[in-house]
Length: 228
Ligand code: ATP
Ligand code: MG
Image 1 (cartoon, protein in one colour):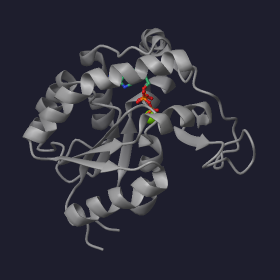
Image 2 (cartoon, protein in one colour):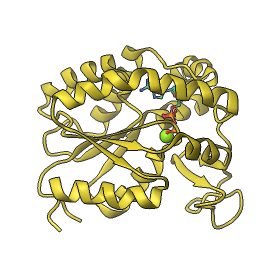
Image 3 (cartoon, rainbow, N blue to C red):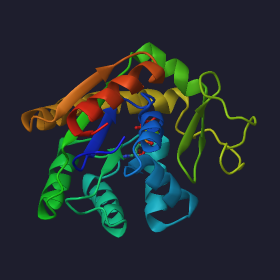
C-alpha cells in the first residue's frame, strides 16, 4: 500500500499485546514506513554496554519505567539521527510514549518540526491471552524480531529467520517481572489515552490474536492514510 499522506503512528498496548508483531507486519505492507521501539532501543543499549544501557538494565529487570526525560531524549535523538523529524516522514513508535508526561514532551518536540503524531492505536487483547503468550516468546535482540513457539515459530528452532543468529528469552518475561509490567501499564494507560483522545486521534482495535488484529489495524490505516 502507498500512503496519500504521512503517517505518524503510535501503537499502544499492554506488554505482550503484540506491538512488535503488528509493527513487523505493517513494515512489510507499507514500504515507506519506519519504526522505533523504545524497548528494542534500550535492549540494544544494554547489549552494547553503554551508559544508558547500564542505567536501563536495572529498571528493566525490575519491570519499572525509566525516567520520562531520559526516554524522551533517547527516542527523539533516534528520530533526529534517522532523519525522521520532518513533516513528510512516515513512521511508527512502539512503547514510547507510555506516560502522559512522555506524551507531552514528545508532542512539544514534534511540534517544532511540524511532525506531530496523527494516529494512536490501542491494541486491546485479553489479559488471559497475553499471559499465555509470554511464556512462549523468544526474541532476536539486534532486530527486535519476535517469535512465538506456538503461533509464529522460527523456521529453524532457536534461530532468527533472517540472520540465523540465536534467539533469546527476555529476562523480564518471567511471571514475576511480567506481572509488574502489566500493572505498570494499567496504571499509566488512562491518562495517556485521555491525552490522545482529546487530540481526536485515538482508535482501538480488539482481538485475541495478532491474525485477528492485523487486518483491523491495516484497514484503519488504509481508510485514513492509504491510497490502495
Ligand atoms: P512488549 O515488548 O511485550 O510489548 P513492553 O511494552 O512491556 O512489552 P518494552 O516496550 O520492550 O516492553 O519495554 C521493556 C522495558 O523497557 C520496560 O519494562 C521499561 O523498563 C523500559 N521501557 C521501554 N519503554 C519505556 C518508556 N517509554 N518509558 C519508560 N520505560 C520504558
Ligand atoms: Mg515490544
